Image 1 (cartoon, rainbow, N blue to C red):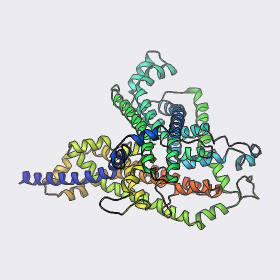
Image 2 (cartoon, rainbow, N blue to C red; image 1 turned 30 degrees about the vertical axis):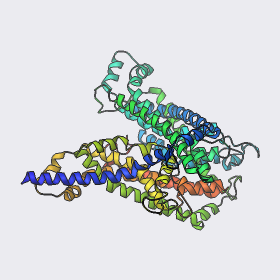
Image 3 (cartoon, rainbow, N blue to C red; image 1 turned 180 degrees about the vertical axis):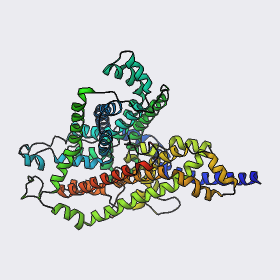
Image 4 (tube, one colour; image 1 turned 120 degrees about the horizontal axis):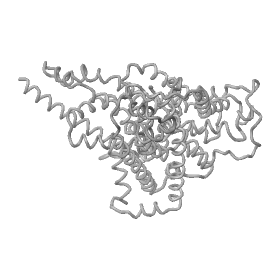
Length: 567
């Protein structure tokens, strides 16, 4: 009787796994496949002519060069900042490590267009902060951030958290016994770091560098807000400008450009996985207690230096953004007699686009989080129980939509949904195309924590429930969901936090009535409404910090490692 019941349960699991896998593949991998088909065909026939024409255009070659330069040097800036913080936080006896890690995560959670806007407000001749201090450059002076150097600098700041997180994870797995053995043998300070710690963490450092380069390559907000005014186009901004122009062959052309970014990005992903594979060769040792090498008299100066850097890259730009939002006109110094809340009142309570954007962004982020919970929980459990060829293939390709630049995914979604199969209907220009793009984009963000949580799940509990007659639905609701709920909740919060401020995907998909908050900030700044853009940006920054604080407060309920800034 139990054997028949077990076989019936297995068939139900197999059917459910197949159904959910088909849905997941259609949502995540089908757009990427459609993009590839468009790039290698012309008018429905296989042809590389258009691809050759697009790839040899001077504008394409120039944008490719600019993308590689800004992403490459931006990654170096991230590497210097992120690795310095990671080594000091993970290896030494610094105080207030939790606060340091939390502050280091904020730049990554703040949208890139807000990062660019905040830095523009503290530099240049119209800076309210510099005017208040009386050190603003003369009117007519160039804005130094409207340049390749400005893009590189801000890309480095924006993505330093990626280097920090990946390297810190590798450092925390370094066996403490090895370091103690080196110290007993007479090694001290930099010699321990150079001969023992650094060789063991090179795979983590390499993986973080690779994914940082891929992320910087696909960044749209910073190159758009700093590069477009300077006439400095990268591949993402070139795609945006071409799509805005619209022509008879524009979709085919931008699909080729998107594939070009994708090829470079896939190279970075493969390099990252190579480093992660090598990372499994760590020595076996005790990692129960984190390393805490004493800094001695240098501890206070090091702490002052680290907090000064955080203030420079986080507090100062936010203060500049706040100052610009409180003045009646851009370029006016901030004084008691010039303080005005007009920009806040206008953008938050009078502009219909802002209320629509808040509604759209909240609804899209919340909807994507809930849908991904519903899909990823049973899918992760079934893939763990029943390892098929299709599930293993999906697992290996799942990270692709998230790792690829957002503009690549946007073009893929346009090509897939501009005309629905077997009908003349289209989702392009509707909010649903943004919603589906968010699900594809953030699928891995939800799936990976749930998958990691279920790998620790004892299958005997599910088998016991099945042996007493519990149906598949009952086991999912009463056994699997409660055990994986903390990881799913953490994933849902992170998806919401990221999607709420998203610009790179929605910049190419929005239309009148479907604006998101990132799009509204970009459009306000582009149209010269800097005060309102700053006020809305500050509002979003406050929302981000409150949500991150909420995650921190609930972090004790989550499995270890789910919240990335937990120490």
